[in-house]
Length: 245
Image (cartoon, rainbow, N blue to C red; front, top):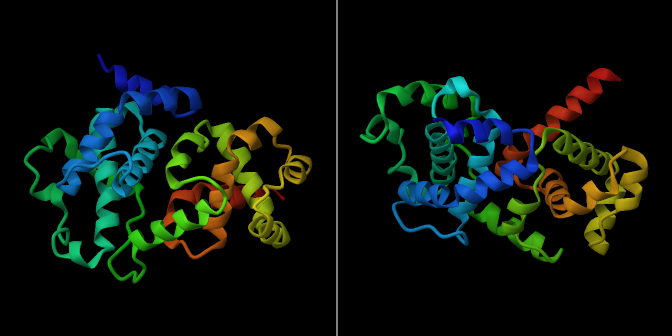
């Protein structure tokens, strides 16, 4: 039975199912993060957050014909963690060659999955001078001023396709109106009513995902090049909407 493969397919467009899947797979996510990091990783560590983002990305990209979901998710999480480690000088030598080449625990049948991951992910090379760890630390400080943490984003990020698009439209509206962004930073008050009246997004959606929206606006309007990679969907929505007008 491919129970979790089916669950992952269903979770792609269902927020509640994705949250349930993440809850069921927390140990798997921590285990993968610990194995790649070569040390014990808890939910409080940055590495867990990176792995969690990779897991959510794997759910969105996964198709049943790609084989085992767990194999696919592990490879996506590993790749994201390695991107994270490669940005740090002390890890550059250790991860200068892809670990999959030397990994004895990757079955031959998983190489098709590995290839799919390579083709679907945008890989950041070593020439970036921005340290991802510093970037996450900076973002944590920014979010702290709004009264929530980086870890809170895992619970309030949109999962269903419809909700993701609504949140993307809300972010785009704010980014296209710099005064709203400036007012957000000054007052720390999210302009819920203005967005609701201009973007055809329900109040319930805006309230539920307020923290995510604030973080997304700060990331996309700030100096967070690595974190922006996790919000490419918003730029895709912008391009699609521009093409229709």
